[in-house]
Length: 71
Ligand SMILES: [Zn+2]
Image (tube, rainbow, N blue to C red; front, side, top):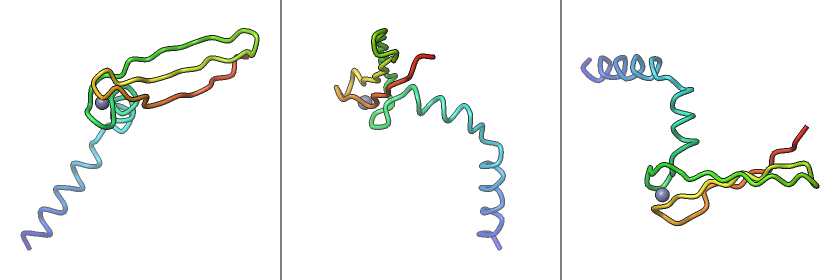
C-alpha cells in the first residue's frame, strides 16, 4: 500500500516537470559535470553555413559540433 502511494506521488512530480526548461538546461550545460558550456559560432559565407561548437571549460572536452545551413 505504501509503495503504491509513493508511485502515485512520483508520477505527479514527473507530470509537473517543465520539459522545455530541462531541454534548455541540457543544451547549455556539460552532460559530464554540469558546468555552463562555452559556445562558439564560425560563419563560412563561401559555404553558406555556420559551425557551432560547445566546449566545457572544466572538462576540456568538445561536447557538440553542429553545422547550420544559411538560407
Ligand atoms: Zn564538463
